[in-house]
Length: 102
Image 1: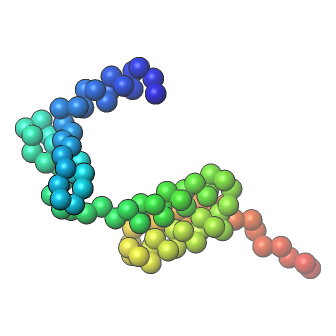
Image 2 (image 1 turned 45 degrees about the horizontal axis):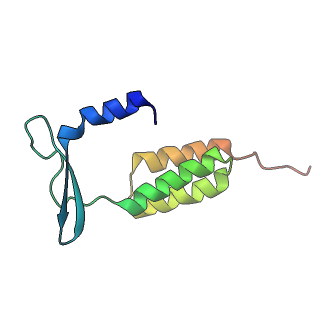
């Protein structure tokens, strides 16, 4: 990481709170008035985030059919998710056209 990036992160240090809870490490992002930016306990759907990231990685690896499957699974789990719909559209565009043997 470049020195410039470290300085950018250091500037945000006052807005990040880390503490241990009975459930594990809690990371909290606060605004300039030290108010939490997200509700406490508002869980993050890691499975969906991972599926979207994996689908994007598969697109970068030029594997649109596999990416399409990841995006479809995400859409089934969380209907209407724009990033899943966008991923499906990108994967559909990148798929090779079917061959005609005629």
